[in-house]
Image (cartoon, rainbow, N blue to C red; front, side, top):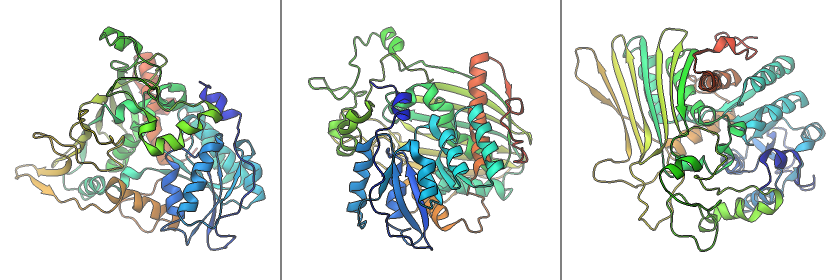
Length: 473
């Protein structure tokens, strides 16, 4: 396998030939997208769909030419007038300045975010970046400095804010229904399909993803920050790799394991991913391994995994509340439970995104049930969501949740509308910027420091380059 760092540095991507999507309409924002993995599809479909009137996809870029060509094919299927331009990631600044690029969408691996964000800002364009903003203190400082020096804009896409169930909880808290928040208990469980997937991809190495405390939980920490409108102050963390990995497999007597899942002659295995069984994974990753050697289907019980699969944190907030958070990545069901205690009552949100992983089924297993709703249920646990509020000395009542069309209960479409049309007046404050991104990753960064030292960590002592309470350097 080619090392991810090497593959991301030495590009084999396309030349700058091709036509811009839709020409040079001055009313449409000129956009380049860098990183043509799975996350880029949402943006490409939006640009050639509902937001074609305001967005112009000028170019794609990736170190893997095969993945660029995959999305050129999708653009054609979506009715694009022709292939868009493409360029090597190493020529990002040159392309931005030569082609009047106004905004760059960054959907590359987490550890590359800071490099690309800083380069885009200094080249004169704004940034839309997938969470997390970055993975370490150095990345935070560099982004903070670049924003201050250039005055340009960075948007971090926290689509969970837009999910109707999460906005319903925000409204309850913001409207003072349960009084002043005193504590939050938040449990998130990833099942043995979705959770396992982080241990077979590039995420499995902490140097690439920052671990699940940053790659995955930055979403969750942002939700808490936003729900209670407060700033994290101190973090104490505990956790480890207790289920996946070669040592845990040996301890449980699992025997020898293949290094990857896409191999002929292997027996059926609930943890095996054969990319040939999924048309999209095969076309996007398996067929393009020859360009960079990236393996999307590594076995979850092999050596080389450096991230944790069980995590627990205590987070103190500047305004007084305490967050108790836990994450498990090998649960038999997927979803989350959050309870918010206040001076006048309590709100409880329970979400079941996949009630059971049933390996005996013949149908294709959906990796991420939060993005693609499914119907795997059992007699005891059912997919669904429920928000219950109970004020002191009163009976509990259920708050109705109205979902829309699309991923995350219609939240993805709302996020995309804000991105491409500009956010309007939003009393819930869902649009997020780089300060929100910093506040979310600060918890994970402090958590990783706490895991290393065994001690609580004050976020203000990390030296992120900005006062998170004020959003100023």
